[in-house]
Image (cartoon, rainbow, N blue to C red):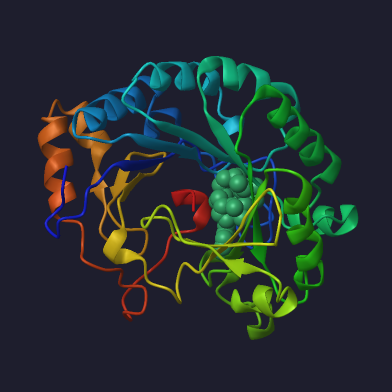
Length: 318
Ligand code: SAM
Ligand code: SF4
């Protein structure tokens, strides 16, 4: 269905948990975040009900995220439920990759199409330091298992952090040379844990182009994608540069987001949230409510406005 500005809303991002097995310094406090009571988060059945209602309104692209979505009990059965909607043409999941070594096959068999895997460094020690204890080899094995299982095209997400991984840009780019793997550099967003980080940690994505001048810009096939695409000559994979703040892609925005506790956000950078859990549990008309919220989607984000208070990425799933 179209919103009030004529944008076709066809992409649903579902955060199914705030919890995570890692503690990335830019995303989570060291102690983690308090576990919510079971009744405070959407059940798998409620999530399924929401997806079914959205599919009727024209959603044909779904991404599951978190927190770490593979840490939620029942994830494989949720994927099975969602994948029975043949209208969904693109069904993806964003993960830190650490559980893929054991789960990739089951996820594919349950109907998941593809995965985006977050990996900010290719150095074991730096990985352990940034994730506060994560093991890089788990992720690397996870990437292999995801490839074997057919969860491609695989996209690797790296948050660009000055003084941390700016010396690895060439290495990340070279991963796209021999295999059809895409690498996407994401600008660090100054929200949550990062609000007080030093300015030197924030690098504009153009820095990637300075480091690798042989990258050539490609025509973006999907105007609603926040990534600007580049490629090395003769490479099999692509490089995506994602600038969530400096570059506005609002005019082509096609997405809505739902948090694990059932808050519907029509814009990542808006304070406005709508309580879907209440509608579901008090017997409201879900479809009418979803339509109402689509029509309230703002024309563009308000991140530069003084009164915007961002949620942590772990709550909205990036
Ligand atoms: N746990 C999964 C993962 O790490 O891929 C899914 C959730 S995570 C919140 C989604 C994405 O948000 C990850 O790629 C992560 O690197 C990114 N992210 C988290 N905090 C961020 C920040 N402050 N700025 C930019 N990206 C961030
Ligand atoms: Fe966990 Fe992903 Fe946040 Fe890292 S970025 S702490 S893996 S949710």
